[in-house]
Length: 270
Ligand SMILES: [Mn+2]
Image 1 (spheres, rainbow, N blue to C red):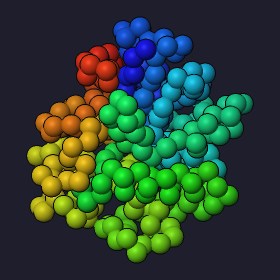
Image 2 (image 1 turned 180 degrees about the horizontal axis):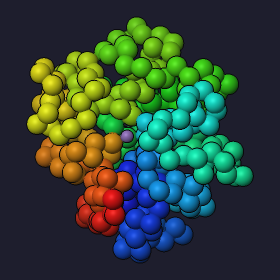
Image 3 (image 1 turned 45 degrees about the horizontal axis):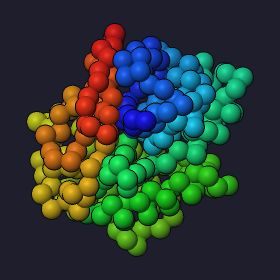
Image 4 (image 1 turned 90 degrees about the horizontal axis):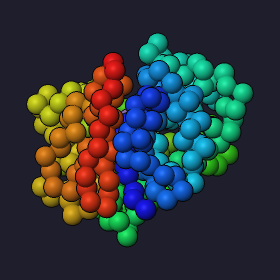
């Protein structure tokens, strides 16, 4: 009856199976949380998504930037990138079933009993958990509405780069999505810097990791996230659990057992 949170899988199906064996995962009893980027860049996105779909009643996941990118490509709204490995998934006979499941994904998941919240990239420092939940629900509602295509075709871009309550329409949805799925560095007021992908030492002048601000509104909430492989699992911040340990880059796939905060890893071939 344990709950495990797993970092960015990115189509690394064999590493996922290795990790599930290691934790003796039982979908009848246990629950799997996934921090997003379930697919892309890795070798077997189709097997990964099919497997997760087959155990979906045991799975809670949030959408990552790669998952959203897949949806935009699948709907014909965006061209594939050269580094995408989505072709078998795009050509699969069961792709619509998989898309219909993926698109129901959240941007933020909280379990109050366990005392954990999960997002793909982060929560900007000026949002309380309550505010973050409300903003996640705004984007989720659009993804599950007839405006889904309008959103997916206009979610790309780095502007606006700073939150304002009065933002409306696609600009509002874009910055909310960028906070939850792409953020690494920002300012204490939530101005985003989306170019730098390296470690904390590479912080651009005037910016810092989103979780590093001492007055961050969610500093007392336990937050699980992925997306930032260069952290190598070390955020060195209380209540912050960085689970992307770069499996797709030859690192490891990491699971955190929420009940006792024990870590499990499977090392991955590059
Ligand atoms: Mn990501």
